[in-house]
Amino acid sequence: MLVSCLVLLLLTQAAAAPPPQQLPRCLDEEQLAAVVEGALGQLQAVADQRQSPTTFSEWPRERAAASLPDSLFPNGTDPESGQWIGTKPSRWTSGYLAGCYWLAYGMTGDQRWADLAAAELPGLEPVAAETDNHKVSDIFDSSYGEALRAGVPGAPVEEYQRVMQTAAASLSARYNDKVGAVQSWYDIGDEFVVIMDSMAALKIMFEAAAMPGGEQRWADEALSHSRRVARELFRPGGGSYHGARFDADSGEVEWRGTFQGYADNSTWSRGQAWAVVGFTHAANITGEPDMLAAARRAADYFMRRLAEAEDGVPLWDFDVPPSAEQPWKDSSAAAIAASGLLRLGELSGEERYSGAGAALLASLAGGYLGWEAGQGRQPLAALLRNGTFNVAKGSHSTGLIWGDYYILDALAWATAHNLTSSCAPPS
Picture 1 (tube, rainbow, N blue to C red):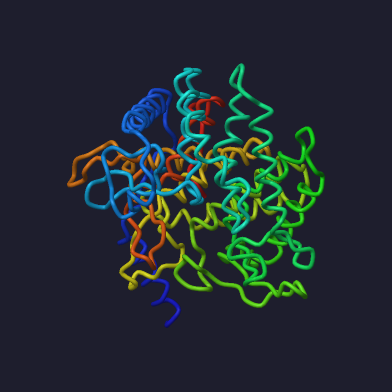
Picture 2: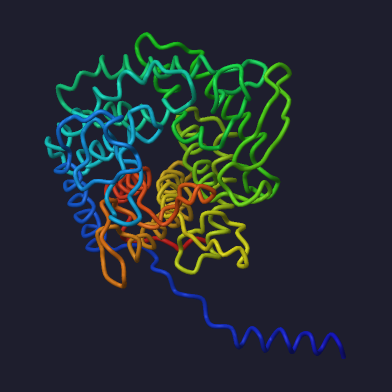
């Protein structure tokens, strides 16, 4: 009798529950073209706002401006004005604007985008030799790495390669043989922390090693790092820790947990997205089966948890409880994952990944575009709204420059690979 009652109760609840929201499967050709046009128009507006040089000390990060001096680089948008807040060249986000310009060049073939991108590079170059953390991977993969991938006729390829190799050498200086990984944060000799974010742009070491005059050990160290991250930062179910602390002398793990997620045992959605894109790049470059397995593992978990999101865009942490009153989305995690999933679909030959990436793009286009106002929202200088940088520091519900870079990358990929005809929702 009790069992019958329970079954009846469950059936009643199921019948009363509203049907799941039908999310867009993908953008059709016309919709994709409209989003690309809007994104490029928004990016041109940022380019038009670049002004005469002003030193960082004269323009604090806390100040937002409609006109961003060209000695500073966009980081996040101001919650009140919607304009970019500038940051110094040595911040890990400084290369993404140049990367956006290079991607725009790749989509259009318009030389003005290449000229804008090239103009950003001199302000970044001195940072390549800095070894205080792993920031050079993000900065120079998105700027100089994209410059090389753009293949602009007449570009100073040897100069770009030299800077890339300087950055790779700086990362190599932070490699520890006992840990088998590159130290992510803090000065060499301090706490040996490795974070999942490190996977995002680690390909700079692989690529620099393959250039004329490159050192094979850079690629060897990058592969070792990738394998240590896969071994230590994934949980059995495929979710991930944000980071781990190691004993630099023994190589043993001392702690695993989070720095920007909800809790040590939760899965920070952007960290999981970094894993998707990072291991996909590692698999593509090396051809190693374990790298492809790690990419699939990260992607499968992301897709499974994404099914919980009503609008197809994840919360900033997959495990934030409803009672936490922290219901903020992270559009940048969605953009990063879209970029990785689209590539993983081609690399693995599994359409479910490219379909999930295309569906993420459609979800972002359905309410997260920065230039679309209305419904109490002001237009932003960023391409995407509702990004979350660091909840603990109160940074959420904003535009983020890396979100812009990755949605442009995903849009470029979708356009080039004609992904408008068929796609499937995340599952």
